Image (tube, rainbow, N blue to C red; front, top):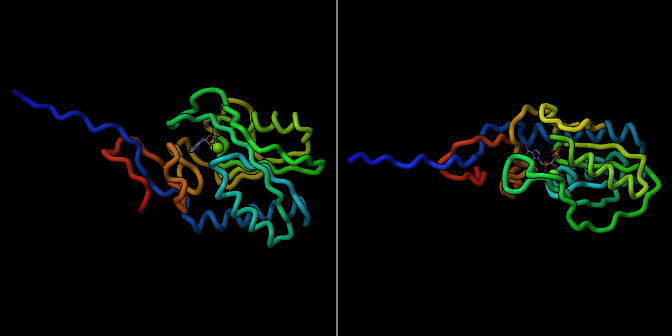
Length: 196
Ligand code: IMP
Ligand code: MG
């Protein structure tokens, strides 16, 4: 009798580093320069999309602060992914603390612009709150996967059509803690929680 071992489950695991912590630092500095040049010193309202943007927002807020821009910060919780690497359906709006009323400009901050559905939903929500003076800032842009017309005013890095984790971005809520950005690749024998 011949025994065949079952194939290992195709568990995605951590692949190559796309951008190191140092490359991210340099790029976030440059984004802060651009934003500071466009808005000038003063207060600026930021609305960040949870959860993926939290590290990017924290770094951006501090880099803007030393350039004289002081962010006020609101969050909205939007999600189009279940437990996977592809959007599971329509963008879900989770309960979100009420947005501060603002007549001034708003900077919408997200981790990655992929299909464009999240940004489109966020824009609609903000415009229903009377916010029309809006610019968007994303750490990553994956233009190959766009499903609706959407673009961001400030983009950290463009990426190919790979699933990216680290620096706030997750797969199944793992990998957010990584200080760098890496690709997730298919087919490992065991999940790698990115402790390397
Ligand atoms: P969109 O609605 O398809 O544009 O996707 C935006 C949201 O999907 C982002 O805010 C992320 O939370 C998630 N997302 C899209 N691509 C990736 C990825 O490569 N890694 C991790 N999260 C992603
Ligand atoms: Mg997100």
